[in-house]
Amino acid sequence: MARANAAYYAGRDPFSDFITAPEISQIFGEILGAWCVVAGARLGGPVHLVEAGPGRGTLMADALRVITRAAPGFLQGGAVHLIETSPRLRACQADALRPFPVSPVWHETLETVPRGRLVLLANEFLDALPIRQFIRMSDGWGERYVEGGDWRLESLLDVPPELPTRDAELDDVVEICPAALAFAEAVGERLLADPGVALFVDYGTARSLPGDSLQALRDGRPTSPLVDPGSADLTAHVDFEAFGAAAQLRGAQNFGVVEQGRLLASLGAVERASALCKSAPEQAGAIRSGLDRLMAPERMGRLFKALALASPGQVAPPGFEPDGGPFSTTGQRSSRNDD
Image 1 (cartoon, rainbow, N blue to C red):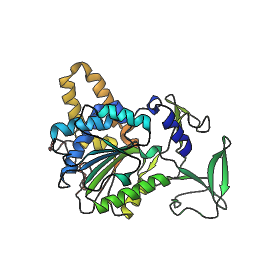
Image 2 (cartoon, helix red, strand yellow):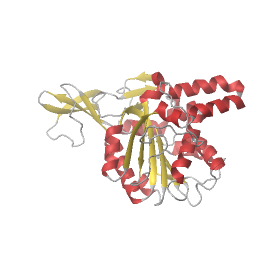
Image 3 (tube, rainbow, N blue to C red):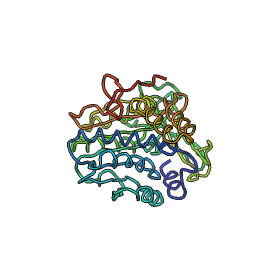
Image 4 (cartoon, helix red, strand yellow):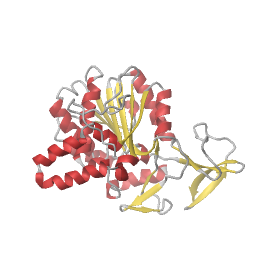
């Protein structure tokens, strides 16, 4: 999976095969921009604004539109940092951010982002990282992999310690994502060393559960992950429980998982959509349709989830308050969408 996705992202525009939340509605990035302002203000000074896997730069552009208007001093002394390895996508991101008074800095890894306070965003970043698949057999565990265009199964003498085996039954497929766990550890270490907060939005499970979630998309349609490696986007469900636990072991506070629809509702997405509809009534249908796609439980609202991490001693970020109370980005309480 690692080689196939590296070739895929290097050789073509991945967004011809799938669409992400920021591309569906500007509200998504605007709401997360307001989230950054509120969460970052609690850190006590200018911050480094970091995005991992920024795609075409749409989310960061929408976020900066809110940040530069609502909190022009938010980034004074800090900067915008983008963790991106693809030269093709870096060029798209540079174009998207050109209208804003920022000088983005690109990084291969989180480790090269300068020390200091930080706010980290990652939307549909973890799902593209390579996974390993294991199968529970009658005599132990085997690892499933691709060789010569077909599946192979190799019996294991040593089981990886991060493999969640407690709920697995005979013939169950169990997945782990070493790259995601390594990134979680890096985030945890950074949040222990410097004041910060991080928000991860992706599709997956709140608990570590068995199941084969590997899928491939080509030209917007499901296809076999075995056909023409490097020509399709490969993704797998994020194991939020394992990711959060790995970050927590390295020192981060873990505020748990919230469904995307609930998070957007608690942050004022419905109110923002109403305001946009009033200012552009000719686009009201498209605005409502886009928001429904993001929030409806039968669409992205339930399958997509968000996890928040922060430095020790930080209060819960907006949308993750321990009492479950909703938070409006205007500072007022708003009704929660209990779809």
